[in-house]
Length: 113
Image 1: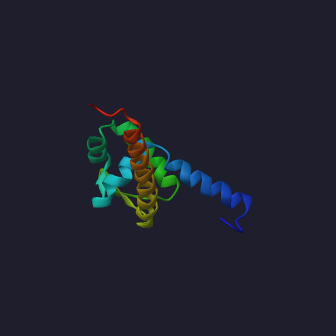
Image 2: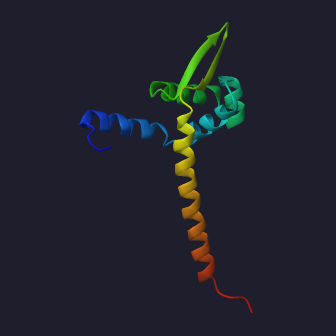
Image 3: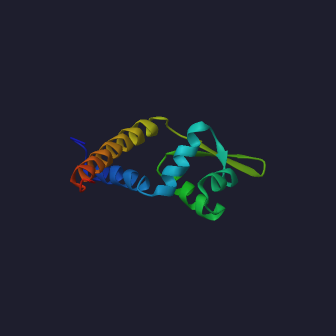
């Protein structure tokens, strides 16, 4: 982040805000296996097609997914695979924090006799 202009930092913040919604993370996770259409993503994420389309629009706006029309169907795929390195790094950190909290809570629980 060092040396970035205010405008660049604003764009970075907007990029991260696009990742702040659980459904968008589910979409990205489902696209790990390859491209999918809106209907397939809606089923996989247990959401309506309208909801998935709205989230895909946000992800596309931030350059995370690419949209490709084929006849009457539209397919989405990941624009840059490095998004998974970022998500895996953050998810790993969160998992370690949750494990530490669970361990602490377990050590504070009353002992059974």
